Length: 210
Image (tube, rainbow, N blue to C red):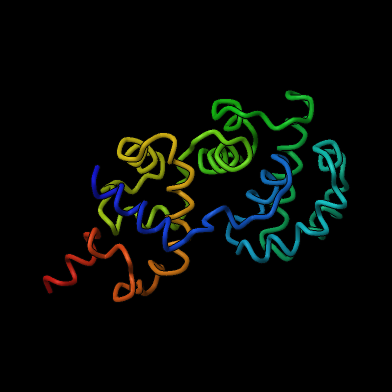
């Protein structure tokens, strides 16, 4: 699809460092950071995980942690009670079923507590180098505005994008849309006038017709 190729080309030039904003050094750290990032900024998550990752080094550490203490450790990320339970249950499953290692297939990842397709694809693409389309709030919004999908269900959006983006570019494309959604195609007021891909955007075309 010519439009998608042009969008990727332009955004790649506009956002040369489009890698994931969460800081991590192994798949377990990215898994924990992604769970904590729900309803929280990546900046705040990175502040919290700086100490968290020094304190908890393995899935076993999280699995056997005092839950109240873990809650306090992640409190600044919000919804800390639910997140602490999710992290602990997930790590208990990792220990029980995978020897404490994070699996590298979508099918296995989505069987873990607190891990859906979005989190699984974040891990596959950014920790394991296996292409995946990540449909977070930014990708959801931007892909609809551009006109790359008419669906509202994240799984359906994921499959729509998989059809029009070359497989080897799935992770890169997701990261580009996430950054574009943060910087330009924002939720409340998209900065259309300064958008480098407005020529390829349905939302901009509709604005011009008004």
